[in-house]
Picture 1 (cartoon, rainbow over the protein chains, first blue to last red):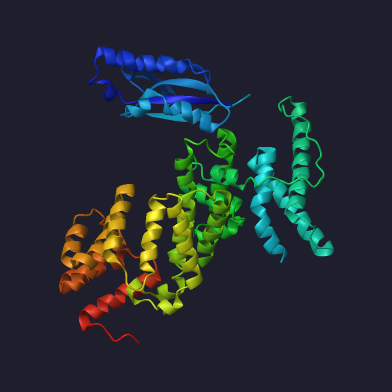
Picture 2: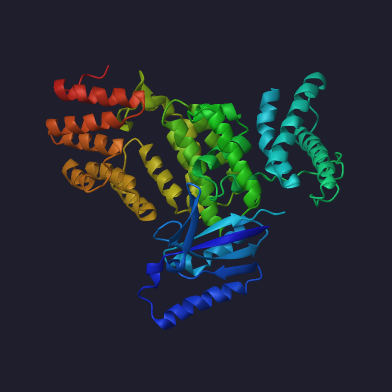
Length: 112
Length: 394
């Protein structure tokens, strides 16, 4: 069974961190990739780099910024191959965002 | 008679079928079919020697039929990759009890609390959707949707049908106990005694499956000690406070059993929230309540739960040891304005301090928040007595 671990970061949790501390957090993310259950994943650039496209009255509307302006920001994801939800939750609990005030949403993928 | 057998067997049969098929929907349908066949056949021929095994085997065969049909359908579109199911016959082998796995699946924290409760009553209690809907005062369609959403999540997210690993067990067992206590309290709050009895029955089953867990014994003790006072709690449709209850109406057998279970929990090193609450309930069953001990237990419970409601109950014990003034200071420091017992407790303390105006205002607030008729009548009487002085008990 495959699950997406959708990582929501609290950007302000990085505010007080020095370069070394940020490097340590990044190392944790990289270490998670070594877990055999983690079969994929990507990190997103900060929300300030986002551009949103939608349709308004038949017109294409392009705006600066993310879809929703929230305290937590979607920062990246892992794809996990796990026997069941408990195994996926175990990996999710180790994502640094969880202890840094953010959250991880665990969603099963549609299997074709 | 047949109904009793069904009630007794449902959880085991359903659990076994979930374990066998790995699919809650298939298992439920197969279990229902097996019970329907049994109802028809047993009333003609009488029940078999081992009704549980018969039901499981019949249910398995029904499940296999369904999976075969699905497989035939799936093969046409090359989807399903399941081994060809094999027909099962009864061979006298014992069928393992998988109800514990079922408890942990139904009470998985990934399910909404209300869904956990409904699933537990359906899967382990064998209650019908209509019965559960009535117990929780929602429409049958609403309850049906709630249950089917929960089953859909179990299936899609693969919520495991398994006993959690040792590290995760305390937290997950806590979730199971919380569901049982919620069911009990739903039945205790008003006259729906059927739910309280069901919670006690389920807790007995759980204790049978996990006999070494002190908190399971403690929860059963707590429920029994509270339930023992059921007949005395309401008189003429009005709630009767503990101090005014007719002890002759208490169920002494339930008290004895509760005290025995509390001892068992303590002997097994119990010190969790249910053990402490059961210990408090045990003190309350005594002729003369040891209030300093009760206050100390509420202290401990407060440390374990951090709950302001516990602090409120502690204040009630403090009122008995240090007087109403000390208790009122504790109560007034709490942020529980929307809670009816906060106001009724304040009212009681103000009344004892001779502050009639303050007590009246607090009883009014409590009345405004009260949901059950029995409580409303009690508070209304207290309000009347404030004006006229207490009447001789009649």
